[in-house]
Length: 173
Image 1 (tube, rainbow, N blue to C red):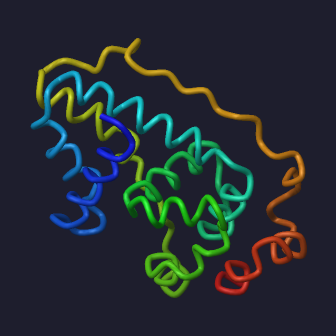
Image 2 (image 1 turned 90 degrees about the horizontal axis):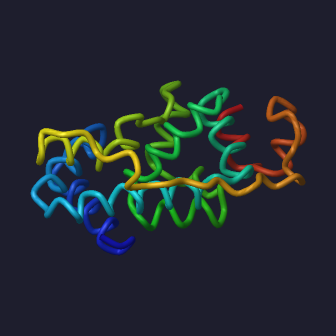
């Protein structure tokens, strides 16, 4: 499975499931694939997580969720994966554009947090469902890039955050 096939899987799951069930539906659909494809899907997922490991996106997650630990950032990126390729790519290019996303606007209005821990284990769950075994630990790796030092500031600094993420800061103020 490559990135294009992974995003098609997410799109199919988004079509068939309620927003909070996309990861579970993606696992169900992936479990129907050959074992080798499920294994490679895990690597694609980890590659996308590494690609999205960026300070500006972390700052956006911090604003949206009212704080964001290391694990919280993983779960936020899991949620972002379930939003599909277009939303994912747009958020990486311009994290402040998340202010336009309907779920983000709803989170601001309702005081909700956006995260999806289950999305991190789409392939893991599919593999176990399909084979009855755990995904082999040596079948995937992840290497996070260094975070951008120009974004190394306290995300609680409202002045700095509102300068860098003005639309999200206004939405969540």
